[in-house]
Length: 458
Image (tube, rainbow, N blue to C red):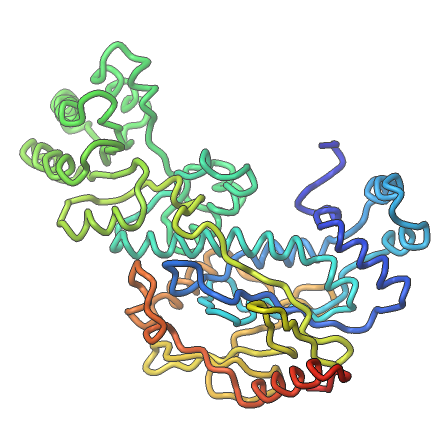
């Protein structure tokens, strides 16, 4: 990678076909206002909702979207684009509007998470980046929410950086996980960038590097008195006994906050460790569990009454094996005030610019209505103008803690059945109704397209 490229800002973070389409639009003079919407058609397996996350990065990207001199030179060397198009790119800026559900909002199938209203070339170019950021962060936030619920109010730490698919993925997963309720992250850079609490213990290598386990514990606690000690490098229960011996040596100066178990049969070992600590008068010392755990194993431990006080979750938080992707789509739904839709089998889309209305009853969500953007429906409209004419609006500015609180409210407002770790049958899924006007608009456009006619206005 050359030194002058910032992958988080470069307009070259796009697929080639976006640029070839832009070149064609430019040649044809197709610069009318387009509306693109980002949504997913089906929930991933074992998911009953998705949490929208990643919008803040998208808005920042759009505000600074530019083709630098080096970008244009490189594109010229490709030999694919003519000089007239490259000159056009030299002054390219995003000047459109962005409407979106706020970060931390729970969303369901076919509901627009993000809506772009902009000149066609501008709305087209950003597809790759928009999908990339909303995908990884929404996936991580949704997994973290499940893990947090499975923890039953116990703190969960993100230990996933070393398993993430690259450095950017690790950072974004840490941010999204915190948004969804995780207590903090072991990633120091993520802590600095996003203001997330930085959490950590020790590795087995530290214990192995010393002549004996007790000496390792003693040396580490002298430097970090209120630390968490990893007790399963050799024999877990012997490790707990050495913590107890350390407490006897230190007396009232002993300040270790917790021990961590990272392997073995946690269902058996944690209660035995708790008994040893309590019998030694170390009731305040908490027990953390880690080691390849997911929400299902966490739930089993808690349901069995295992006295665990918190969790460190790595791989499953950043690379969720049970639902590794969400089938997000970014589709053109309107061009020059005329509705557009896709008719491909199993990949149809709803035409026209839309709004989502959420109905509640005594603070509990009871259903959503997907409607045309200028309709009135009962409930709270979810899509909010986050960017106008290429600049953030006041609604487009928030803190990560704002999004975290919003996410907690959204999760608390869901029907309890949606918090099951298994996928609900269709009859129990969250109801999303299509308004009569939107249904009529879809039927009308389908008939015209099938008949080979011109697209009618919505």
